[in-house]
Length: 243
Image 1: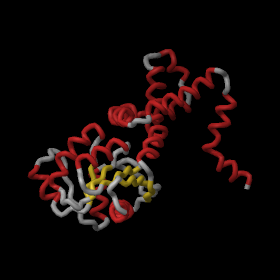
Image 2 (image 1 turned 90 degrees about the vertical axis):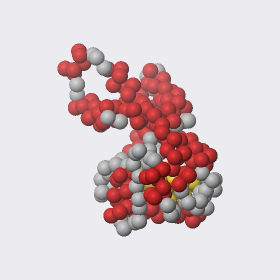
Image 3 (image 1 turned 180 degrees about the horizontal axis):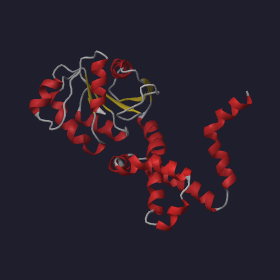
Image 4 (image 1 turned 60 degrees about the vertical axis):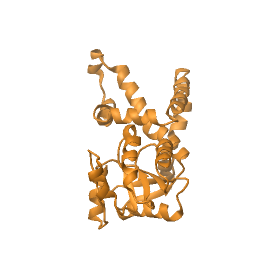
């Protein structure tokens, strides 16, 4: 993600510098000198260590930002390590987004962030062609626990349940293959990353408990009720058909 954002920022004519591992004082000092905005693009598991290394080299007026998929804990960590303004962000797309697709970015101001700091951070992403919107850390993390983390954990549990059952293979259907293909990258290449995001989000287990309630409804035979609730996602399709 960091390499992608750096390349797009340069293509947009922004004055940017990037630093990759190893993060040494010799590489950080020149890259951070004079920075207005520092965006930390690392996994949540190593986030604290990285900002500890970066912050001593930033100008006191610089805005410290991140792009992690969880916001409450990283914001707390940034505000503990940095006495200046902090703004959390979350680009809701991966490192190879469709250029024609909507590319939203959540912007979550820290306690010391003034409007000018939010506008500076938002302006970086709008210069890249992204659509920005504001949120609180709690609202963001609750949403991601349900959208991102539940997508991961339910797919993980489903395919773990069926694993090793060779007798199922003759019965595989096209709809199953579509789900298998959709989950392949998440559960093979990116499983460790998604597991870390699940554990780092304070609302993940609450979302699992709510999902279990839906499974309990299924176990009780209330399938029609679940179908009615699920159709909410396609309500606009119904309105379009009526018109």
